[in-house]
Image (cartoon, rainbow, N blue to C red):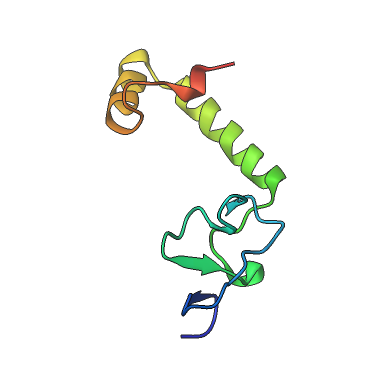
Length: 88
């Protein structure tokens, strides 16, 4: 398989070093579990740290704008009851 993603066939495939989705510990992509991104220009998940922070802030603002009942629903469904958007 060639292109944006390639299975690791025993060789170490490095993630793009400036991608915010790169796991420093495992040097792999946090999004793709058994595939590793090595082509940032074609990767749908590639984000710089600044883009990741802006996306997170937009998400937090959207969640805070929901009613308390909606926030409780999403917290229970996706965050084990926690509301990370209300932390700070």
